[in-house]
Image 1 (cartoon, one colour):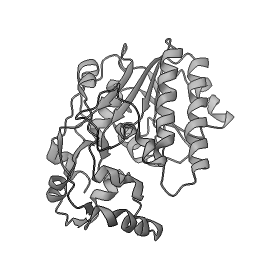
Image 2 (cartoon, rainbow, N blue to C red):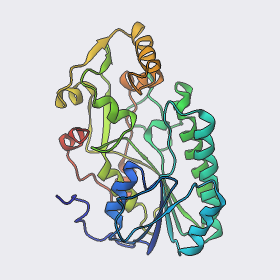
Image 3 (cartoon, rainbow, N blue to C red):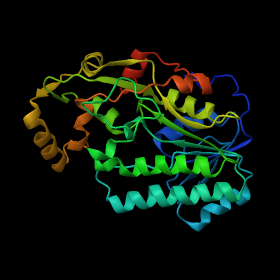
Length: 318
């Protein structure tokens, strides 16, 4: 069955050549299916992409290496979508920091040198951080406080702030920073998707925070719309709504295990150390506190609206 995005109308003002970093990842593959018929797509990733569309050119190269400049010399790249960063809770910080930050710096430098007109950077709404005193629906001006409670997100915050700085220092490059809510989908392997796939997920007794999810295809739709001429700035990107965590687990047929607050962190910590789960105890804040964002700017400026319903989005993790 063809994806609803694959049959979408042509995106107006689509650049003729678009380079996508991290295209071999699960989200990158969804984006490739969406864009490869809309533009000349050039993939950049240190991982192979054997199932890539035939009309997609793929360069298996590390962003930190000098060889990446050959991509920009060989192709008249007009726009770049930067997905080539990530974090796994078991990967040493030094390795992820080098790849995420040094690779991003090299990419931004090449964008300036080779006259790239548009740069779209994928961040995340998790940079705001869940906290007991968060207001409902944080706007793009809210401080990025996630690292105060979870050090594992420091790279993402640094990358986000670096992209914002680049936006102001280089007005000749239309830069867009997207902060989507928790991305989920059948092939997505992030913390949120892995947690929701657990048959017996641990919850915190007495807490039932509102959660925002976005289908991977809708996240890619927002990335494509950000390529429109004139789009510039920082945008939260939301899905079809927000719903209590308990309602999500009920829709998925999960059997939650409520654990008192005093014991849950130690329980999750031991399970993480024993490699029973890939959910570090610092991320428990997402099961307790609110981190909901306002996505109205992306709706207004980018013409974005999610195509998947809330039920479809929730069930996509299956």
